[in-house]
Length: 478
Image (cartoon, rainbow, N blue to C red; front, side, top):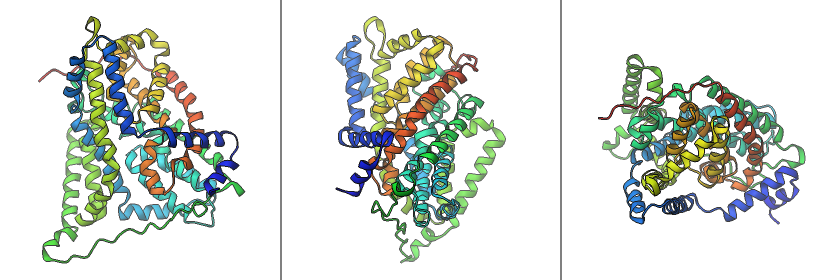
């Protein structure tokens, strides 16, 4: 019997159930790309059942497959820029310093959870790598005897709790970027900047409540005494030494090893940012996905110091973006089939679903949409890509029942994070950093899921009642 099996056998109550769930998921849950492919088939079957002709369905599939090309690259860059910044030497030094702060094992778990969620508000890709490296640095403090599973689960809380309520929320970024919005969705919602989504006081309050709740659960669920399993107990190698950059071997490589170009690029980016802030509304600048990525990419270049070191970090980050590059076109195809493949009565599947949600009425709309998003997210882990699938009919029904559109985006956002606590797909980059398996963490994240689900549903319902309906402003065509 392995050490991991013995640990699972010794668990009781919710932790034992969660370990069993993690084992089942690892054995039976297919790769996320396969789930997306199955989603295309199911959506196509739904369109055919709605009366669409086979030709209409395949035309929508092929016509919409590349609709999200720009957005796909943008989401891949969110992950890549986060990875590059997190692995830069200055951030590595910051991580080592932060690791010296906790004075006890449970305080260490609480700190990792809090910082994971705080950094995730800026960039969820940065949060995964930063928090994983922080967990490893704390685990090297053998005098603390911190449970490595609890540390790893705490490092995941940024993506498992509040990532979509922050600046890298793909749904909020998409709604604030008219060039990235599919025409069908733009005609329903108009453009929604961060002032109507991320930066409403209701969204910020909800984010603060979830952070506090998560930290408390992480603190008191961390094992103590004989139940602790350290990184050493789990045979995890905590040596974080990286391959050094090879020395310059020829004169032509001088600029590759020079700090001159990164500094100049940093100065230009800073000048551009100042110019944007002085000439445009602050929320417009902050909501710009392209501007956001520009700042993070050049920040990574400056922090790594030289182009050679930066490119080495980029090469290490590339494997983490593969899933996004091949999955998002399938979500675009699904969205096109749902919205464009007209069936009986000239109505597409999105029209039928809009009618269904409209019939719910404003009173329970937030709760129903929240539950629907959670359930769908368990089977389609997308990082927000499935917003393109849901948005046309969800936002249309929100307009019909006069639910605030900005808050509807936030209902989706907060509910989108909840299923990440039980679906291991978004753990993959973190698991690679930690050197563990999903089953080692899901016992703790499942406990968070049990508390988060009812709290999220209550919050979206109560806070939703504080909004007034604002009709969408549809931009004029070119």
